[in-house]
Length: 420
Ligand code: PGA
Ligand code: ZN
Image 1: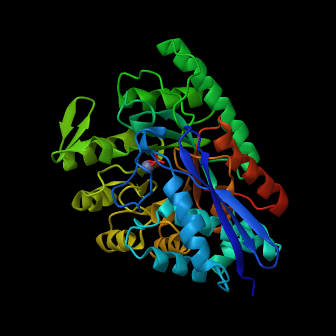
Image 2 (image 1 turned 90 degrees about the horizontal axis):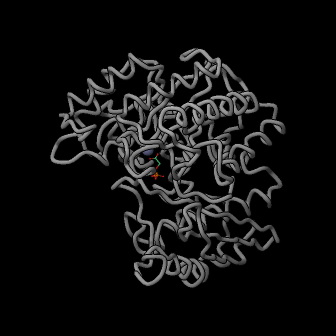
């Protein structure tokens, strides 16, 4: 059984130029694994605690030197020599060492960096690809590739708030390969770029995740323009391609109302608005249609949406098994947006995935708005049979790293995306 010989973290920068963690793990067998972790901006309140230095003189308080110190000076001495039979043993040791419910002492970023580096080191030790290692954590084998959901237009916190909806995403429905999906997406993305230049005089400037972010007059226009771009590129909306939205509505919910395009909507009115969008546009998924604490309305939303449309929980669930359990009991969602750093270790994220599956939910494996060039998310989506993967747009290397890795996994395994 290999033991941990060394752990070493380093502060590096993410796609927004903000500090994050890179960590290396060496096992006594000589196997080495390393990886870097992402960071969100549109975060849920129930997320595990991301430790930042809060020193305003350095990176405006966003430094990660304390988290790095926690890996190198607290976690490393405690875990060095620990016979790490598997990921569950390592992650349990990390959780115990932190000792808080939200990983606030050592930081979820410190814990995940170690959890990831260890996973890579074990995969190297066992001479298996990372996706195979991840699927073994669920006691399974890779069976499929995830369907892509790709950011076309951005609003909300990722684009300066010109419209409320955070993401309008394209979802290739016809293709059964990543290769064909990406070719189709490139067509529509470029057509949309021409369209918004024509309509809003905007050149190709992009938001945090690479989505186009012109000055749309309202949310409805953003959806309409997405459909126009699909049609102009020669595709049939609802057949070749569908749409998904991340409403991220916790971020415009205040005083019991949804502040959408100058209106103050009640929960019931917001549900009616979303339902109308699902009838007018080829939507296959609505993420965070309601605020993260508006549980009662989530149950109504799930009942109101047609069965072809996922009621997808991000901020609502925070990849947290307790919150997922509550949502299953209340029938408050039908799909989990899985972000490992919302909970902090791979073992807990695997528990979240198992729970969602046990309720017959679908799983969307998701990146964060602050990403790095690391590509482990692609392996995770394949290893855990993600129905969908959400990485952002098809620009910017921190996004492309994941798509390129999917192309490699596709070539290596011969797996495909199941037909809809
Ligand atoms: P975040 O946003 O990574 O900024 O939290 C992504 C999302 O809301 O899905
Ligand atoms: Zn979201």
